[in-house]
Amino acid sequence: MRGKYRLPLAFGAMLILILSSLLIAGTFISHNLTYAAGSSSDWTTYLYSPERTGFNSAETVITPSSAPNLKLLWTATAGGIISTQPVIANSLIYWGSWDGIEHATSLNGTQAWATNLGQTPTPPGCSGRTHGVLGTATIATVTINGTPTSVLFVGGGNDIFYALDATTGAIIWHTQLDSPPYEIWGSPAFYNGSVYIATSSWGDCPLVQSQVFSLNASTGAIQNTFNVVPNGCVGASVWGSVSIDTSNATLYFATGNGGSCSQQETNAVAVVKLNASDLSFVGSWKVPSSQQVSDGDFGSTPTIFTATIGGTLHRLVGVANKNGIYYAFDEANISQGPVWQDTIAVGGSGPEGGQGSISPSAWDGTNLYVAGGNTTIGSQSCQGGLRAVNPATGAFTWQSCMTDGPVLGAVSAVPGVVAVGEGNALVLVAASDGHTLFKKWDTSSTSNKYYGAPSIANGVVYIGNEDGNFQEPRWRRTRSRGPIKLSGGRLQMATPGEEMPIARTFSRSQTTRVNSPTAAAFTTRYLV
Image (cartoon, rainbow, N blue to C red):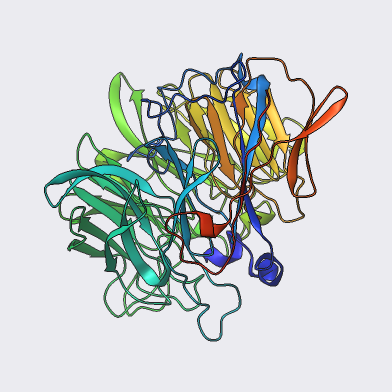
């Protein structure tokens, strides 16, 4: 059940009143704020690639030597929770929020556009809040009416899937996949002219028949549909996202708990493999009853990676379950079961409280990096754990104890650096041995756990959390002239002997495509 472990219903009344914010920090070169805009280091989809590796090999600015110098740059706010991973393309930062708004923010912190994609209401008899944009967008170049166009694909409210013009926010097409209480928690994958997305229930209240769709990226026409459970049955929601192995056109996803059905639901609490071309079924593996826990979903997204086993290169797929076990399968026959498995957290129904794992892993071509909730490393009890794993055997290369909370969002990596959100702290560690390079706490509110995964692109780290705070640390080359602080709604830079207000605030009426009654503001933070 997604609602019980992603953003608990007990916090609903409080969270709906909180004004979310997007916090950005970055690199400072001379006296000017500069970015390598539109470079090959862009992060254009959830977990970086269709294989969901979470690894940006093109990043060269943030390294083990520069990461300790990251500084906060600017802050933006929105009217809802941010659970998405920001994507970076077209010299813009794209991110969604639970008020139903998909945002595009310029690299200096001003809002380029914001488009209202609606909200899914709380179903009758259910407890919680309305949901807006829950999943991360994907940016791809698609031919629209004969013209190559940068298109943003994302799920909105009321189970509607959207394609937007990525430069203006204008809606190109939208497709109704189903209707509430169906929802789109996942993030789309773009591959070979099609876009792939799955549906889920509204926190299992009530259970629904989950489905996977492929749509024509140019028109939004539904090409193929896969029913995760048989017609007449409910359950097996896809809380994570689909992953695609582009080397062999196969698709993978993991599912939640089953429901009522006249036959066995073999695809519930399972890892499933399809052919990407037509969504035909290839195989699946279900967690054995001896390893299942109450509400023991797969709430995560599979990672596709490779390993040499017995002298032969194998393509593998791995994902963690709320039972605290990370499973790795050979793509050639996932129905045969895992080739190895690791216990990475104490199992249970509530990862938000430290049980199990809903964190997708990262793969940098050498190691897997896996994370989750409460665990013991050495003799130390840890609120969360981050581990480097040998992809062939599952053996731990190193283990890092998280002391501020469980890791809920995905693991992200660039050459030499691994990043996670643990509790209310953003942490960057060395990929070589796991020692901490950078750590920053968000103390802006009491509801500030990091749910969104970090993105790293062009010398900047982006991450969103429970109260919407979204931080952008960036490598700083020059010496600061003094501390910065936010005071009276204005950001100030305190220099020796003076204070100089430098904050900028932008109301929704000053932006180009805003269709929401909730105000938002963006504040730039920088050092000179």
